[in-house]
Image (cartoon, rainbow, N blue to C red; front, side, top):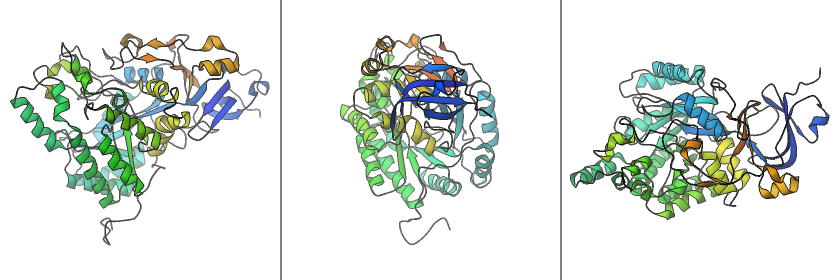
Length: 500
């Protein structure tokens, strides 16, 4: 029986985390990549084709740190608007958070509620991380195993700051012991809560309540200390961890040294820590509130340079948006904090600009290889979060999640298609597809953007003809397996194994 080919992408310059394959065709069947080769339309003359015009074709982005429709963000993106924004920026999978409150005694109703919010409302595929704020013995010993087995939820996020969610070191160790036994990926927000609270009290006492005081209250040293401490806890418990949204050069150095010592340590950074300093928190009319996030934007451009270095040298395993938006001009949004910075909702919009900002300012400037781009935005997230059997690369048998970029001038000249080069533009928020009234990237020049986004073989974004052409409900829930990127070492700080 002849294979039925639903779509052939022609003249692609395929890039994976390890290879570049020029002038290659991709045949898609039943949502999967069926064949890679040359001149495939001659083998399947009746199949529809889509020309890549010599441009890069990369795996669909996996944004592994996205906040959608959480209770603590009443003005943020819904699953519909957030995932619509994702596909417009080349992201085909998001991993968002099912967030436990301190008062929740069971995780099962939490997960059911987030399923209710997401089901049928996503433009792209999705999965859940669990935020643990009340990790009781029952939850750790009885509920987590069932959620891993039945729901395919194989990652948790822990907070060392924010009083409603903060866990103390002993609680962190108890959770780490449970996640280690289950093979779950443990994510940690590393900032020293007491340092921040102390600084906050001092600032407010002196009348420093403006948005810029947020950066003063959360200095680098709060991230540096907490990073060092959680690395020590992870070494004690022999647990692989991922430290999320890193921003400090010193903290990244702690991670690098731990990796050099062969500890199973991973880290991520985000677009805003590459491009913006704390000066963005200044300004008239409370506009600095737009860029309040935690960790705070850093004062010294040296930290921004260190984040770029960490992307290039492997310190950072993943590059995520930490899309955690709140509207600016709304009484429950950023303006909720007009009396004091402590009431400003934390977080920035960025799920749509994550891939283009790194592609334009990393790959196209020579700061990053295109293979490193794929590793950071797709293949490593797939491996770390249990999706490497179907997502994150371009190979037969994998989901046909693809992003076709515009050809560069050089690619177009080589291919003879100069009319397909994208005209650079300066971004305006009205161009984006989220439901937020600003973007921190307002006015930034983009020299490329996803031309097509393809989700499991279906074109869902066509920038030249219609923009979003996929439908709400195209995305499906992903049950995930264990990380294939790291395991406990079986090495402890002394002769005692605390897990036996």
